[in-house]
Length: 154
Image (cartoon, rainbow, N blue to C red; front, side, top):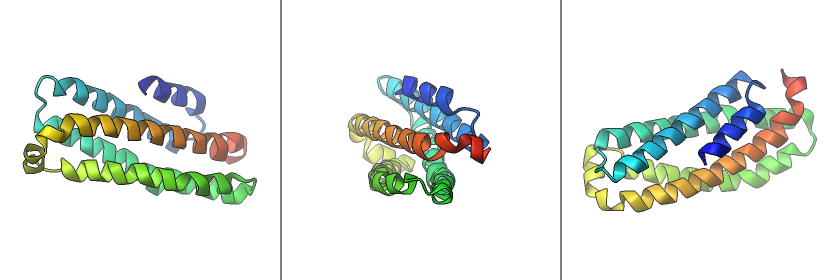
């Protein structure tokens, strides 16, 4: 998953500052995810989990409220079939968002973390799967809706 993130940055980094920042945020989210998973074996504390959730929510929010909107604008502007792809992929992105919100809500406070401590390992694994799905979908959107227009958008 981390290698895929680096590949995305190599392919699309530099094409648009907003996407660059978002891909950097994706990378930070992944690093925090893997650190949290490794710390889990050493009895992870509440603060790293909540910090990870904050990073994850920042990433997801930027995607929904900045990046996707920009990509949709480009799709409308160029009217070359990209909007159809966006409409096709968006429901799957929403599904990953729902799980991410569920995870965040479940571990949002110290009390919640304590209450659901036994679920953390399984939920982190499911979250990793959803994040992988999400990154693949986002990469398809970037490739189709932005990368092919980067010379015209820049």
